Amino acid sequence: MNHQTLPRHIGIIMDGNGRWAQQRGLPRTEGHKAGVEAFERICEYAADLGVPVLTFYAFSTENWVRPPQEVGAIMDLFRRQLNSTERRQAENEQKRWRIRYIGDLREDGAVPADILARLRNMETQSADKDKTVVNIAVNYGGQQEILSAAQRLARLCCEGVLVPEELTLQNIEDGLTTAGQPPPDLIIRPSGELRLSNFLLWQSAYAELWFSNILWPDFAPAHLDQALAAYARRNRRFGSSNARQATP
Ligand code: FPP
Image (cartoon, rainbow, N blue to C red; front, side):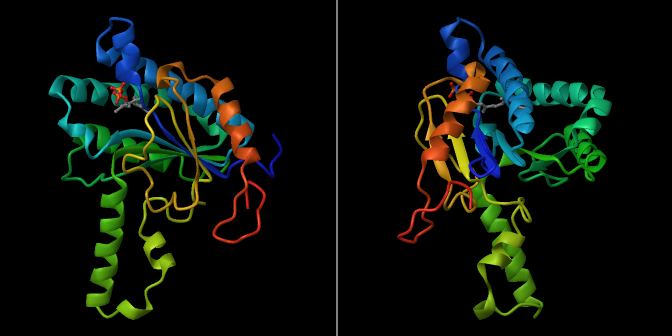
């Protein structure tokens, strides 16, 4: 894969953990555990390929309605994942990964305070790294993100800093959690579902979508290769009548 056809940003909806576990007669939490392993595998592989930005959808604003026991188990998996990332601090520094968490991460919000503090700490520690940005979406919703950007602009208009008629698309983008990053060129959703489920709604306006029946815990580097090969064959027009190369 040459750099002309490598996406600048890949978004991944990690779906199918529950079904993976069910198929094996295991509790759903075992599927999430295996999902974390797939996350580590694919993150490593995509970063080694040289993809500059990766966004993984780990927990949505809607996922809180799941049974408390399952939500609790996913929160514990976040804690374990943070433990293992902290243990590999030196390795991470060498890899030059910048870890970012996107979503509604307000102090008085739904994410447990101990997790929030550690997410923030992880972001600070890796803030100066520049090879690969890894965004992990936690308590994330695309509609909520757009609403929050709109509220920020409304405040600035009320304060007289901005004028409603002069607002631009860039003003909205500046208020998104991915401000300053390229939009996703490719969005991958495994598990057979054909929808975005509130993931990067604004940013994915011109993203290429790749769906597969594979369940997330089974997702292997070979599947990412398939998605990248499909992406490289796409004609991207961005509204014009001329086909452009995959990555602008
Ligand atoms: C979707 O599968 C998965 C989730 C809602 C949770 C995803 C969480 C992880 C992969 C672990 C946390 C990740 C990190 C980065 C630490 P599902 O339960 O909806 O599966 P189903 O559709 O088969 O029921």
